[in-house]
Length: 611
Image 1 (tube, one colour):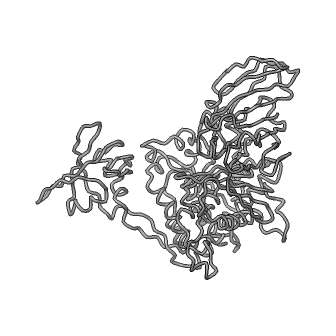
Image 2 (cartoon, helix red, strand yellow):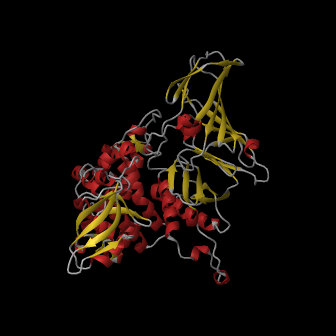
Image 3 (tube, one colour):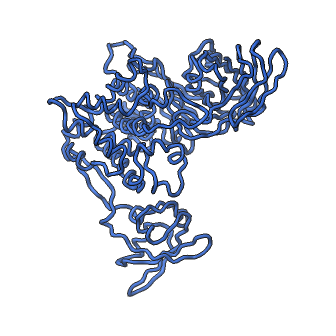
C-alpha cells in the first residue's frame, strides 16, 4: 500500500492523493472512515472526496459508489491497482484536514482510503515537497509521528506505518512553523507551533512541556537510570503539533503525537521588561496567564492519553470499526481520569501551586454542580451516549446530560481520596497505584491494552482487600451526589460557598450583546418556573411595589440595581416577535452558591497533591 500526497491546488484547498495497491483483490473495495478515534461523532469524512478514478494495466477501470463511505473497483487481482482522488481540506480543527498557502495539516482518517482485507499490511506515504512550496514563502517543513524511510532535511519524502490503524493515528503538520525539541527521561520530543507571533517565547514552552512529560513518564514508569531511555514507555519519540489561532481550543491524542489548537494570545510571550533582563530573569519568571495555564493543562491531558486510552483502552476499542459508531461505557475512566490527572500533574511538575490547583478543581466542581443533568444521566450512560448527546449538544443538553470529562474527573477525585483516607495495613494506597497496576495487568501481558470495568474493580480489590462495587454503583452507574465535601475536608481542604452570579441564581445561560439572549433554561430553576425558554430575548423588567417602575435590561447583573427589596417582578420577553410578561419569583441569594476551595491544613493537602 502506497499513498502519494501532493498539493493539487493550494487556493482551492485540495490535496491530491494517488493510492497504489500492489496486490489488490478482485473487485477491491475501499472506504474512508466516518469518524476519528478520540472524537466520538460520525463526521462523514468521505463527503470531502472528489474525482475518484482508478486504473489497472494502464487502462481505466470502473469505480462504483456503494454506500456513503465505500467504493468498489471493477478490477482483477493480477496487477497493481492505482486510484486517484482529491480531498477538500478547509476545516481548521484537530479532527480533519486543512490546506492553504500558509499551512497544511491532515489526519489520515480524512485523506487515506482503507483497502478492504489489506488493513494489516505495511502502508507507505510519500509527501511531494515541490507541490507545497509557493513563491516568496518560507520553506515548508514536515512534522509527524510516522516512521521516516527516506526524507529530506525538511521532512518531505517517504514514511511507513505498520498497518492502517497506525497510519491514521499519525497526523501530519506542514508549513513554515516554529520548531523546537527536548528530551524527557531520555525520550526525544519535538514541539512545532504554527501561527505564532514574534513575541512567542518558545524556550519557555519547551521547558514547561519537558517538565510535564517527565512528570507523566515517571508517574507511569518511575525513574530510569541516568541517560537511559524508558524502554517500557509506549513511545520512543513524540511530536506536539500546535496550531495557534485567533480563537480556538482543543486537542486530539495519538499514539506518539498530539494535535493541539489554542488561542494565539495564550502562548507564552518573551518579556518586554529590560529591567527583568538586567536582573538575569526571563519570561518564565513572569506571572503565568490563565490562558497559558489552560494550554499547559491541555498539553498534560493529551500527553497522559499516550498511556490512558491509546494503549490502556476500552476493550471495545481493541480494533476500531471506522464505518460506524464504536460504543463503550468507559469514557468516564479514559477521559475523566485523564482530566483529573492533567492539572494534578501540572502541580507535581511545579507549574502551579496548591492554591492554584484548588482553584482549578473548584471550577470543575462548579461545572458539574451547575448541570441538572447530573441527576438524570450517570457517567457510564454519558460515555455510551457520547455519539448522540455529548457531541451533539442543544439548548436542553445541560438538563439531560452530564460530562464524562468533568464528573469523571470528580469520580477519580473521590476514588483517590477514599483510597488515601483508608489505606491498607498502614500502607498508603492511592489512585496512582491503581493506574500503574492496571498498566501492568492490561498492557504488559497477552491482553496488550484492552481493559474492562471488571479489571478496575479487580485491581482495587487486590490493592485494598475489599470490594468497591458499591462505590461504582453509586458514583459511576448512579446519579446521587458525590461525597466531595466529606472527602475534601478530611484531606485538609476548606470549602466555602460564595454568592452565585445572577445567571446561576436564576437558572439561565445567556449571551449579552446589546440585550439578554436566553440560551439555556435549567430545570427546576426560577427561570424555568417563570416560563423562560431558549431563544427568548429578555427586554426589561416591571417592578411592583410602593413605587412601581419599569426598566430596560441589557445585562443580568443590572437586576440587582433595579429589583431592590422586591420579591416578585415581571420579565418582559420577546419570543417569535411576540411580547410576553413572565411572572418571576426573585430567588434568595442564600439558596444559590459557588464552590471555593482553600487550604485549611497545609500538610494534609500537600500529602494528597504530591505523593
